[in-house]
Amino acid sequence: MSLSHAGAVLVATLNVRNTADRWRARAPLLVEQLVELDPDVIGLQEVRRFPDQARRIARQASGDRPWEVRKAPKAGLKRLWEGIATLSRLPVTGHARLRLGGDSRVAQRITVALPGGRVLDVYNTHLADGDESLRTSQARRLLAWMDERRDVPQVLVGDLNSRPASAPLRVLTGAGRLRSAYALVHGSEPPRTVPGGAVLDYILVNDLIVVLDAWLTFDRPSPADPQLLPSDHFGLAATLRVLPPPR
Image (cartoon, rainbow, N blue to C red; front, side, top):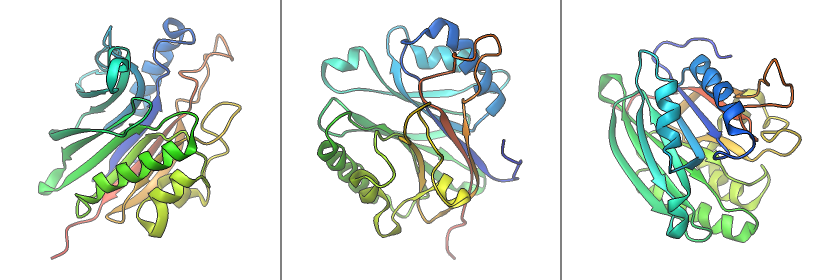
């Protein structure tokens, strides 16, 4: 768990796995660990649209600090089934969605207001399964979209379906354009973000953000059932500080 840092922003990401894999049993576990984490902003992937899974999670985890929920359905017919969503406890001043092309995938951007008149762009995405060349193309499209607002502090969260040395990650992190929050703190990526599997999930930041801490989260199994976890992915969290604008 991160230390508290005054003036910092706590950002997280989790692939929810829709309502598959014993959702009714793992939902309370997910909500409990979300309440415990208490992020300012969290990006969710594989969120069911009907019934509204993102709003249900937000409502159950709200406490005395309600979430603002911004959703981005997948493209095409898959929009009826699922999408991605970002939950924010910071004021949201803007929201946009981008079709990434292929496998109905999309990205979203929310702009949140920070104290002192600053803003932070939070991007959330879930890149395609399977074809790495498609994911690489999606990464280029996403980065080009982010480059339109390169002078704004930016954080990209999500399930990129890509290992650390893969072509999509090289596109996103090439020439220091984006940097892994976890690797900045620990020197490398975690052993895995999929239980028993690989690293597929990331929090990436641009050079207008300082990473104070980063860690795995949503990784604690049920006390009554060691095989039951909040999702089929672990989550990631990072404590970030936005640099002041140049004078």
